[in-house]
Length: 99
Image (cartoon, rainbow, N blue to C red; front, side):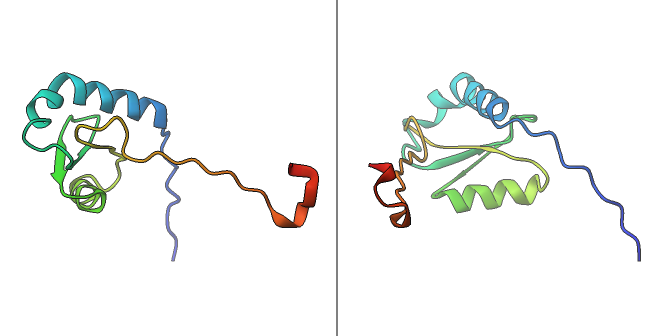
């Protein structure tokens, strides 16, 4: 049994984010912020198609079903970012070198 090895796609997350934000600002923001505030939208940046839903899993599942090999841009409508994460990790085993 032989299978062909598929090359990894050349993915640039910054470019996906730039295109997705551009599409959202230009075409979708005014349309959805008054009627769908707080819901989620996933945008497939090459086609401009989008998927609305109540949560991240919902919109990601819808997008993945139609575009299984694509990465989508996901945002919470009306918010500047879906997830903001800050974390400081100080391993206890390293003692005082991280103080």
